[in-house]
Image (cartoon, rainbow over all chains, first blue to last red; front, side, top):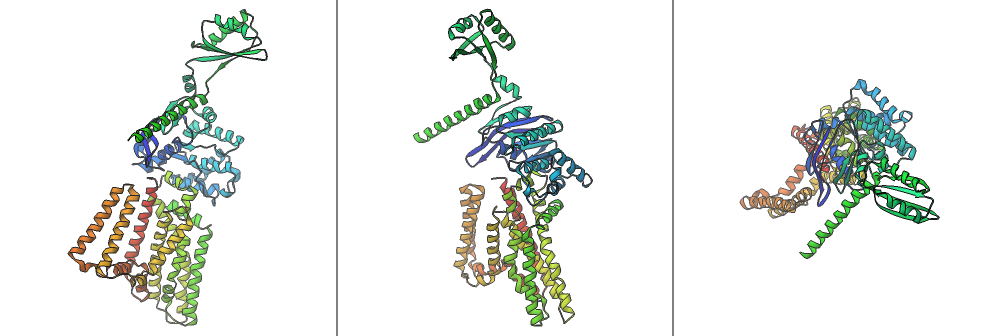
Length: 329
Length: 287
């Protein structure tokens, strides 16, 4: 379990991470989401002891990362943004060094290296120099390095960047498998990725946490007012009076094109299925030729844009205000 | 530490620069031995070592330039930081691995006096005493080179600075003759150093006030000492420069005097620069 409290990191006047607090529970996959420069890597670097914090603390399994660094680091496997590889070593030699440094016993060494390479699909390239491996395989060596020694917490900074689609799927499956035995924290600016593999999503913007919840909850967060899109093979004049009869519809927009009209109906009702059933019945009774009905679901993307754009606009306004103040002085 | 050392040896043994280092060391010792001991029929192997000690200017940068600069460039320093290793584990592991690679060619060199002994009256004690001092001198210079390598991520710059620093140290005895030996000259030099120290404090702590205070305190102390007992400042700069010379102490061994204080001095310099190296690594996490 990891507890991060009031973490702040300043570079001179620039605040990269500001008063960040969260708790990571065992056995889940966490996703750090945020636009470039939001403070994801900085937070991860602090959590793994690669960087000091200006304020705040990080406690990993009861060990403070700054005070009790050696013990805390034994619980962590970390893949930084750029995989830290020695190009002149082979994956086996490289993993041997990392395993020894993590305190893996000599008798378990060979078995563990073989197992980790099997998991990451590196066995074929075990004895090739790292500098001769493709980018995807280098990334795998980086991930293998993080999992060796079987630490309870695995932190991966943008593990799928620069991989081809097939490799991305393979790495995602690997991470899902890791999530069965370890706690995994990964960062990404790709939403679909986080949505696909994470149990919890943490959205960071300008060094501040703007949301922290399960992906589904974040989506429903946005659905205060649900909307349903209806397509019908008729004119606006036919559908409009029928919509007026639906008392549960709070508002609507209609567009007409080539004899087909598309209506987006909004409702405050929470029972979506009932709403759609009622709608379908009323359209049927009034002989409106509806051929498609789709509930419009807010995607994580909308949540993300809403939250991060909002905060960056607020930030810009703040900066603007500060500038004005300075000008007045 | 053993883990880092083993890893570092593995890395260095497939690096071209390690072999280049061994080649230069053996080649210069070989040529010197040929000229002094074989052609000129001198029985003193130690002269060989004292003549070639200038080769350190070339070979120490070769063997130390990559040490930490390369880790920074490859971003593998992040791996080292995230592993359960202390900074001392890392620095000592690297230092001892480099020392081993420095000693390997020395093992060949160590055979020379015994070989020469068969053909003449070689002073074995002086020869091996000098060789031991040569190793300690090398260790101190390796520590200096490692520290310089920890300051940059460009190994070329690290090599250049190391070469300049070692060359300055080599010639510091000669240079000392050109510096001012008057009281006033010493005071000016000390005040300059106080200002430099102030700038370093300012850069490290990023507080201009701290830098000014540090410079003022040091310069003030120098001024007070000057006012009370100005005789202390007579010839201070050349004296300090010759004291700081690592090479000057080596010549005592060559002259047949096994100077224990010099060995202690070499060890102190080694520990001091390894300590600075640890601080430099620690500091990088704090910027």
